[in-house]
Length: 355
Ligand code: SF4
Image (cartoon, rainbow, N blue to C red; front, side, top):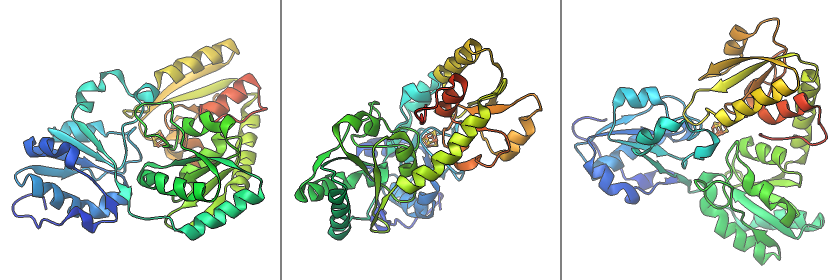
């Protein structure tokens, strides 16, 4: 596919809107291009490569085959081995630098173009009407409206529909300048938490449960998912309660821990020195011992390898979704930063997510 003649397949064949115009000149000037993207975009990579080749037929285009979950993971080893002039990181915008990027990444970041891939799925009026009825029945009048990046193109349309139904709709700005207005990430919900005082409920446009579960764990007001793929809405309260019960049990179990395994991340955007230092101070202040581990990948096997009898609980500062989504069944408590703060300080009146 990369070499010789290519069949130039237009990018509009795929169910995503991808706009290469802002980086057209860079594409034309590059000899080696590396494309990165989440697994959901992988089936469309041949079409995307065809589209790039239409702009620069002599460029050598590489597709990063490894799984990629966010802009927090730029796969440095792949970048170093390909040595591209241009890295096109599809489907995500830049990860907030102050949340975790290592300081020496500026040179790499200057070569990265973050290009969103907006889903072509739309929301129909019927599902917004049904959601509006539910909100009205609950007595909600003002709502925040946010979206994951692939559905950020629906925010304006849904806002108008809800306003037409008589709701006050607030599209909140996240705390980080790298993010779009109204955007949430799996680990970043400041748009929602900053809007809490202004609204009665939150609506998040997203497919799947990953982002909306995080939103409901971050928010204290009701969260509703609006799903463009399934054309349905969902009240997140029952799922939130189920998860909270499980997570609070882990927090309780960790409260008597004397020694913590502090697992810090080494992925490009998951190296959170601020959080690591905050925990070292907190653990020292509360007379706890700790052992620091660095991990690129973290799963039950890695955890099993580092686990010893003198470690009572683990704190993960890399991706706060790992303890909740992947390491839930580990025999010892594996905590997110927010949960670890609760366990160490003993303040459990408010669930903290993610940090
Ligand atoms: S939730 Fe995890 S994988 Fe997703 S952006 Fe945040 S740190 Fe990265």
